[in-house]
Image 1 (cartoon, rainbow, N blue to C red):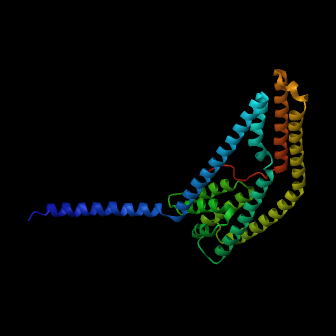
Image 2 (cartoon, rainbow, N blue to C red):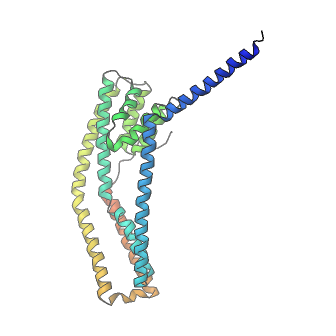
Image 3 (tube, rainbow, N blue to C red):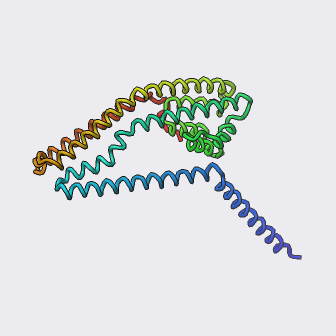
Length: 289
């Protein structure tokens, strides 16, 4: 009896089974809930941001062209377009500060949960991975990214935590990342829960301090916003109702108007910078991922 055909058939069946198992494994990795959600969130965020930018730039372009056509002042059209695009940015310091505070509050909540889980003897890596399932909303994407990286065997744990720190972009986030680094590398896992609780208390104090500062800054921001609105309305009224601005229709007048516009833009940029305040320098400044 010739057994070669039988052996060839067994080998072919084994190869087919290997390919099938490999495809099943790849499919399961693709269906991983963390990675699926991350992909959806990234795509949705990119689409939303692109739509917002497109609408804003379209409105700015149309408004700038209309002002240029009506006034015959190209600089006026450019300034109007720049104003439509730039004013939300210049007056958005309050929203930026509020978002930072919300992220710190979410960091405090997440760190306290990790400390409680680690204190009852749970494995640090699995604890962090599982925390991605119930991450606080302001940091959900960053925590899920960290969980997905730590759940990938070939991804370096230290690099994953350093990437997480870079995404947080905060000095307190660096300290949290370093503490978790000690826990996952087993250099000091027993002390991690207590250190994390201390960090959570520190973050809570920082949140209270920042909220107080933002309350003090809110009134000057509102005053500056009202001053700019009144100035814009005044300039529009003078331009439409009087002949005082005809001098700006000349070449020299356009140059002067451009200089005034640049001065206003520089003042608004400086005001935004002052309104945001100085940030605490980060500890981790190198991306090891």
